[in-house]
Structure formats: C-alpha cells, structure tokens
Length: 270
Image (cartoon, rainbow, N blue to C red; front, side, top):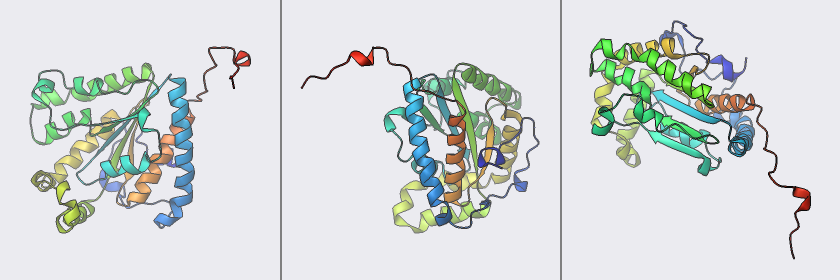
C-alpha cells in the first residue's frame, strides 16, 4: 500500500487516535533508510511544482494541524526544501485579530488560499475554530457544531475551482510531546520556541484528542481528505507527507502549455 493511501481517513470513518501508532515507520527502521527515497521524491516535487506553476490551472493547499511540538514548522522546512520559494506561500494562523473576529470565521482562511500555479501551506488553519474554540468553550456549542459542514462546503468550493486540498494531522504521543518540551527548556538555542501557553495547553490533551477525532471523522471528504501522519519520528513524517504530495500532484496529469508564438521563427542575434 502506498503511503499516499495508508494514512488517509475515509469519509465518515469513526476515528480513535489511540488506535493509530504515532511511532509507526512502516518498512523503514532508521532515518538513513529513507534518504535515497526522499532525495528522489524531492527531485520529483521540484519538477511537479514547475509544472504546476507553468500550467497555472491548479493550486495546492496543504493544511498542517497537530498538538504543540508536533512538527509543523519542521515539516515545512524539510518537506518543502529545494522547491522554488517564489511559488510557495506559508500562512500561520495565530490568535484572530479584532478585524478577523468581526468577520465570519472562514474569512481569514479564504483570503490566504493560494492562487493558481502556487502551493500554499497553512500552519494551523480554519480548523482552530472547531478545536481551540471547542476545547476552551470560546463560543457556544451550537455555534462551533455547525462549522464542520461549513468547512466541508468551503473546501468543496475551493476544489471545484481548481484548488487541491490536502490535510495532515501530525500525530505525536503525549510522551513525545513531553520530551520535546523538555528539550526546549534544557537547550538554550530552543528557549525562544517555548511559551507558558504550551505547558498550559498540555493539560487539555484529552479534550484536544476528542476534538481532533471529531474533525477527522466529520471533515475528511472525497474532495479534501485528512491524513493521520505518524509524527514521533520526524524523518518518517517528512517521507510520508512528501510521498503523498508527489503522488497527488502526479494525478493532476499536468502538461506544459503550448507556446503563444511560433518558436520556429525565433532567431537570436549575435
């Protein structure tokens, strides 16, 4: 089974995250076992990105979600290494501004969707409005409960207009998160990464797991699937996501556009 389909959540599938092993590494035992495969995939990724840009008939939206320390930033650095940065945009979704709160919850996501020919990466996303909002009871249940269908409709509209949507839940264990947080405390070069909120949010781990299970069940669709990516091993996380991106872009069967002028008549003066 290809990695592309191994971790996909089928529509309406009941998801229990405790049944998904965050340390799973498939047929690979160590990081070095994946280097040749990853190098080949990165080369293909660069070629496919150039096709995407040249054809300009599709956009690719990558959504990264997960608990603190799950590796969203690392995924962006490693998976997208070597691609043309002019055709890739990264948007981080922080606490909404006053302006954003005065509009519908999807507004800030919609305006950040990549244009055709480009790759867009959401570091967190509109899903915060059924995760953080739910866990901390920032709005009534009757408000966030209707957002799942609104999100599905929004993503379907994007797909129908040429945007490919791929969503990755970076699945780490609670023990792995503890180790990564402790590393940030003990390593002076990582002090800038840690905030008190990281520790506070850990206390809501079980609530977040329930919220994510609902998201994965209700919002993995044929047009915008969720993938549960084992993320305890960073090197395997990177391989799994890169392979999924490459296989998805291949399916678009993209072609370079025909020239708009008669190439045979062009002459370059000395």
